[in-house]
Length: 207
Image 1 (cartoon, rainbow, N blue to C red):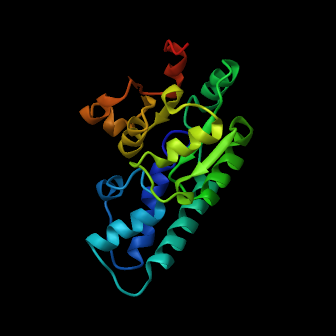
Image 2: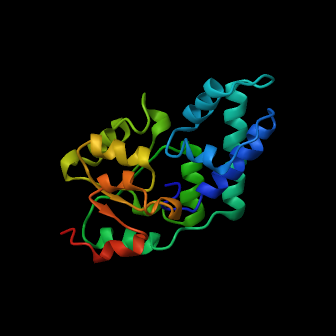
Protein backbone atom coordinates (compact mmCIF):
# COMPACT_ATOMS: atom_id res chain seq x y z
CA UNK A 1 0.00 0.00 0.00
CA UNK A 2 2.54 2.59 1.15
CA UNK A 3 4.53 3.85 -1.81
CA UNK A 4 2.48 1.87 -4.33
CA UNK A 5 -1.20 2.76 -3.90
CA UNK A 6 -0.67 6.02 -2.03
CA UNK A 7 2.29 8.37 -2.07
CA UNK A 8 2.79 7.94 1.66
CA UNK A 9 6.52 7.21 1.93
CA UNK A 10 7.37 10.94 2.10
CA UNK A 11 4.65 11.30 4.75
CA UNK A 12 6.08 8.36 6.71
CA UNK A 13 9.47 10.03 6.63
CA UNK A 14 7.95 13.29 7.82
CA UNK A 15 6.09 11.48 10.61
CA UNK A 16 9.20 9.57 11.69
CA UNK A 17 11.27 12.75 11.83
CA UNK A 18 8.60 14.55 13.88
CA UNK A 19 7.98 11.64 16.24
CA UNK A 20 11.57 10.68 16.92
CA UNK A 21 12.50 14.33 17.40
CA UNK A 22 10.29 14.31 20.53
CA UNK A 23 12.72 11.82 22.09
CA UNK A 24 15.82 13.69 21.00
CA UNK A 25 16.65 11.81 17.80
CA UNK A 26 17.32 13.54 14.49
CA UNK A 27 16.36 11.39 11.52
CA UNK A 28 17.46 11.65 7.89
CA UNK A 29 15.61 10.40 4.79
CA UNK A 30 18.16 7.60 4.42
CA UNK A 31 17.52 6.45 8.00
CA UNK A 32 13.79 6.31 7.27
CA UNK A 33 14.40 4.25 4.13
CA UNK A 34 16.24 1.61 6.19
CA UNK A 35 12.93 0.37 7.55
CA UNK A 36 10.72 0.67 4.45
CA UNK A 37 8.31 -2.26 4.25
CA UNK A 38 8.60 -3.13 7.96
CA UNK A 39 5.73 -3.14 10.45
CA UNK A 40 5.29 -0.13 12.73
CA UNK A 41 6.25 -2.13 15.82
CA UNK A 42 9.36 -3.41 14.03
CA UNK A 43 10.37 0.09 12.95
CA UNK A 44 10.22 1.39 16.51
CA UNK A 45 11.97 -1.69 17.93
CA UNK A 46 14.66 -1.45 15.24
CA UNK A 47 15.57 2.09 16.18
CA UNK A 48 15.29 1.45 19.91
CA UNK A 49 17.78 -1.42 19.57
CA UNK A 50 20.08 0.69 17.42
CA UNK A 51 19.91 4.09 19.11
CA UNK A 52 17.95 3.74 22.35
CA UNK A 53 16.11 6.53 24.16
CA UNK A 54 14.58 7.51 27.46
CA UNK A 55 11.37 9.26 28.45
CA UNK A 56 8.85 7.36 26.32
CA UNK A 57 8.00 3.68 26.05
CA UNK A 58 8.08 1.87 22.72
CA UNK A 59 4.27 1.70 22.85
CA UNK A 60 4.01 5.49 23.28
CA UNK A 61 6.32 6.11 20.33
CA UNK A 62 4.32 3.63 18.20
CA UNK A 63 1.02 5.32 19.05
CA UNK A 64 2.39 8.80 18.33
CA UNK A 65 3.97 7.71 15.04
CA UNK A 66 0.73 6.04 13.91
CA UNK A 67 -1.36 9.07 14.87
CA UNK A 68 1.03 11.46 13.10
CA UNK A 69 1.24 9.54 9.83
CA UNK A 70 -2.53 8.95 9.82
CA UNK A 71 -3.18 12.68 10.17
CA UNK A 72 -0.63 13.51 7.45
CA UNK A 73 -2.27 11.03 5.07
CA UNK A 74 -5.73 12.48 5.75
CA UNK A 75 -4.38 15.97 5.04
CA UNK A 76 -1.93 15.33 2.19
CA UNK A 77 -2.25 11.76 0.91
CA UNK A 78 -2.80 11.25 -2.82
CA UNK A 79 -3.10 8.13 -4.97
CA UNK A 80 -0.09 7.30 -7.10
CA UNK A 81 -0.57 7.32 -10.86
CA UNK A 82 -2.19 4.26 -12.35
CA UNK A 83 -3.80 2.92 -9.17
CA UNK A 84 -7.43 2.85 -10.25
CA UNK A 85 -6.68 1.93 -13.87
CA UNK A 86 -4.55 -1.05 -12.79
CA UNK A 87 -7.21 -2.19 -10.31
CA UNK A 88 -9.79 -2.05 -13.10
CA UNK A 89 -7.39 -3.89 -15.41
CA UNK A 90 -7.13 -6.85 -13.02
CA UNK A 91 -10.82 -6.74 -12.11
CA UNK A 92 -11.81 -6.89 -15.79
CA UNK A 93 -9.50 -9.88 -16.29
CA UNK A 94 -11.27 -11.71 -13.46
CA UNK A 95 -8.37 -11.64 -11.02
CA UNK A 96 -9.08 -11.94 -7.30
CA UNK A 97 -7.54 -8.85 -5.71
CA UNK A 98 -6.14 -8.57 -2.17
CA UNK A 99 -4.24 -5.97 -0.20
CA UNK A 100 -1.44 -7.30 2.03
CA UNK A 101 0.32 -4.43 3.78
CA UNK A 102 2.83 -3.97 6.58
CA UNK A 103 0.82 -0.96 7.73
CA UNK A 104 -1.42 -0.95 10.78
CA UNK A 105 -5.01 -1.99 10.02
CA UNK A 106 -6.28 1.42 11.17
CA UNK A 107 -4.04 3.14 8.63
CA UNK A 108 -5.09 0.75 5.86
CA UNK A 109 -8.74 1.61 6.46
CA UNK A 110 -7.91 5.33 6.47
CA UNK A 111 -6.09 5.12 3.12
CA UNK A 112 -8.69 2.97 1.35
CA UNK A 113 -11.53 5.18 2.55
CA UNK A 114 -9.71 8.36 1.49
CA UNK A 115 -9.05 7.00 -2.01
CA UNK A 116 -12.47 5.31 -2.34
CA UNK A 117 -11.06 1.95 -3.46
CA UNK A 118 -12.05 -0.45 -0.65
CA UNK A 119 -14.55 -2.26 -2.89
CA UNK A 120 -11.83 -3.59 -5.20
CA UNK A 121 -10.36 -5.92 -2.57
CA UNK A 122 -11.74 -9.34 -1.63
CA UNK A 123 -9.21 -9.70 1.20
CA UNK A 124 -7.50 -6.93 3.18
CA UNK A 125 -4.68 -7.97 5.52
CA UNK A 126 -2.30 -6.15 7.83
CA UNK A 127 0.99 -7.73 8.89
CA UNK A 128 0.09 -6.55 12.41
CA UNK A 129 -2.27 -9.55 12.57
CA UNK A 130 0.50 -12.12 12.05
CA UNK A 131 3.50 -13.37 14.00
CA UNK A 132 5.96 -12.21 11.35
CA UNK A 133 6.01 -9.31 8.92
CA UNK A 134 7.87 -8.79 5.66
CA UNK A 135 10.45 -9.99 4.58
CA UNK A 136 8.91 -13.15 6.07
CA UNK A 137 6.36 -14.61 3.58
CA UNK A 138 3.65 -15.27 6.20
CA UNK A 139 1.53 -12.26 5.25
CA UNK A 140 1.42 -13.26 1.59
CA UNK A 141 0.92 -16.95 2.30
CA UNK A 142 -2.04 -16.30 4.58
CA UNK A 143 -3.57 -13.81 2.17
CA UNK A 144 -3.36 -16.37 -0.67
CA UNK A 145 -5.06 -18.92 1.57
CA UNK A 146 -7.89 -16.49 2.34
CA UNK A 147 -8.29 -15.81 -1.38
CA UNK A 148 -8.43 -19.55 -2.03
CA UNK A 149 -5.51 -19.33 -4.47
CA UNK A 150 -2.32 -21.41 -4.61
CA UNK A 151 0.67 -19.14 -3.83
CA UNK A 152 2.42 -20.12 -7.08
CA UNK A 153 -0.59 -18.71 -8.96
CA UNK A 154 -0.36 -15.34 -7.21
CA UNK A 155 1.13 -12.12 -8.51
CA UNK A 156 2.46 -9.63 -5.96
CA UNK A 157 2.97 -5.96 -6.81
CA UNK A 158 5.47 -4.31 -4.46
CA UNK A 159 7.54 -1.19 -4.08
CA UNK A 160 9.82 -2.21 -1.18
CA UNK A 161 12.74 -4.63 -1.15
CA UNK A 162 11.45 -6.25 2.06
CA UNK A 163 8.14 -6.92 0.34
CA UNK A 164 9.84 -8.26 -2.77
CA UNK A 165 11.84 -10.76 -0.69
CA UNK A 166 8.66 -11.86 1.11
CA UNK A 167 6.84 -12.45 -2.18
CA UNK A 168 9.75 -14.41 -3.64
CA UNK A 169 9.95 -16.52 -0.48
CA UNK A 170 6.24 -17.31 -0.95
CA UNK A 171 7.05 -18.52 -4.52
CA UNK A 172 4.83 -15.84 -6.05
CA UNK A 173 5.34 -13.94 -9.30
CA UNK A 174 6.41 -10.36 -8.67
CA UNK A 175 6.09 -6.90 -10.16
CA UNK A 176 8.14 -4.21 -8.46
CA UNK A 177 7.51 -0.48 -8.87
CA UNK A 178 10.33 1.12 -6.84
CA UNK A 179 10.50 4.77 -5.91
CA UNK A 180 12.63 6.96 -8.19
CA UNK A 181 15.68 6.67 -5.92
CA UNK A 182 15.71 2.90 -6.53
CA UNK A 183 14.95 2.74 -10.26
CA UNK A 184 18.54 1.66 -10.96
CA UNK A 185 19.04 -0.37 -7.78
CA UNK A 186 20.22 -3.85 -8.87
CA UNK A 187 18.62 -5.44 -5.76
CA UNK A 188 15.24 -5.05 -7.42
CA UNK A 189 16.27 -7.12 -10.43
CA UNK A 190 15.06 -10.28 -8.65
CA UNK A 191 11.49 -9.25 -9.58
CA UNK A 192 9.84 -10.87 -12.59
CA UNK A 193 8.91 -7.42 -13.89
CA UNK A 194 10.51 -4.11 -12.90
CA UNK A 195 8.35 -1.08 -13.75
CA UNK A 196 8.51 2.65 -13.18
CA UNK A 197 4.74 3.14 -12.96
CA UNK A 198 1.57 1.13 -12.43
CA UNK A 199 0.48 2.49 -15.82
CA UNK A 200 2.93 0.05 -17.46
CA UNK A 201 1.09 -3.03 -16.15
CA UNK A 202 -1.33 -3.13 -19.08
CA UNK A 203 1.69 -3.46 -21.40
CA UNK A 204 2.71 -6.78 -19.80
CA UNK A 205 1.61 -10.16 -21.08
CA UNK A 206 0.04 -11.49 -17.88
CA UNK A 207 -2.62 -13.72 -19.44
